[in-house]
Image 1 (cartoon, rainbow, N blue to C red):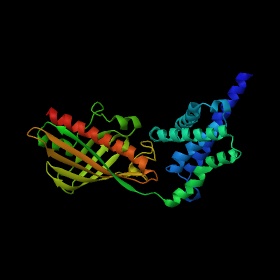
Image 2 (cartoon, rainbow, N blue to C red; image 1 turned 180 degrees about the horizontal axis):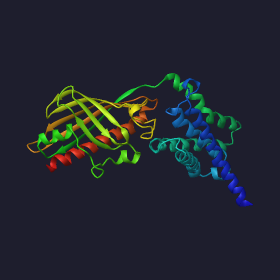
Image 3 (cartoon, helix red, strand yellow; image 1 turned 135 degrees about the vertical axis):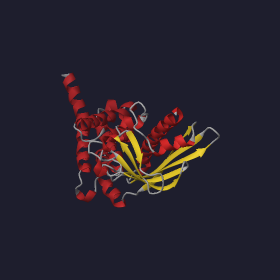
Image 4 (tube, rainbow, N blue to C red; image 1 turned 120 degrees about the horizontal axis):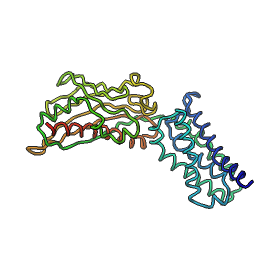
Length: 322
C-alpha cells in the first residue's frame, strides 16, 4: 500500500509538469495567433523550464522540499522525460535539445528553488504566486514577439601553422579533394549530427570564380569569389539554399540558410611567418536572427570554428605530406 502511494505520488510529481511541458510545446510549436508564440524565443527556452521547475517542486512533499538538492535537481527528471519523449517520436532533433539543455536545466532549477522557498515560508498567497510563475511564458511571449528579433553578425576566426611550400598550401585550400571519414576530425559537428565535409571545388582562380563546398546529407555551400590575390588572399560569399537540404539532414531550428542561422562569407589568408612556415587564416561571418542571440551566438561560433578547424587540419596534413 505504501509502495502504491509512493508510485502514485511520483507519477503526479513527474506527470503533471511533463504534461505542462507538452502543452507549452504544442502552443509554442504552432504558427497560430499571428506568431505570438515560437520555440525560438526566450519565453520558451527560459520560462517554460522555469515553470516546469515550479510545478515539480510545488507538487512535492514538504519534507522533500526541505532538501536544497531535491529542489534543484528533481525538475531535471521532468526535463529528461520530456526530452526523451520528443526525441523518441521525432518531434525534435538531438542537436537542438543538446544545445538548449544547459539553459533548460538551469531555468528549471531556478523555478524549483523559488517554488520551494515559497512553500517553506508558507505565504498566504502561495497559490497565486505559483500560478503567476507558471503563466509567465504565455504572458511574456507576446511582449517578446512585439519587441522582435534583432539580426546580429558574428565572426568565427581560426588559423593553423603549416610547414610547407605556399603553392601546396594554397592549392589545397582553394580546392579540397575528397575528405575521408578518417581525416574528418570535426568532433563537435559530429556529436551534433551536422553534415561532414566531403570536398570543395573551384572553377576559376580569381574574382568571379564559383566555388562549391560539398558536405554529406545534401548540404552544399554555393560560394562566389569576390576578392582574390593568388597564394595570398581569397574572399568569397557563401550561400546555402535551405530548400536544397533534405528535411532529415538538420533540425529546422539550426538549418543553415534558414530563418535563424545563415553563413555570409568566408576568407582564406596566407601569411608567411618564416622561410619554412606559413600561417593559414580562415575566418567567416555568420548571421543569427533570434531573441536570444547572446546564447545562440556561443553555439554558432563553436560550430563554425569546429568546421573551419576541421578543414584547416586537413589542408595542413595534405600540404605537409607532399
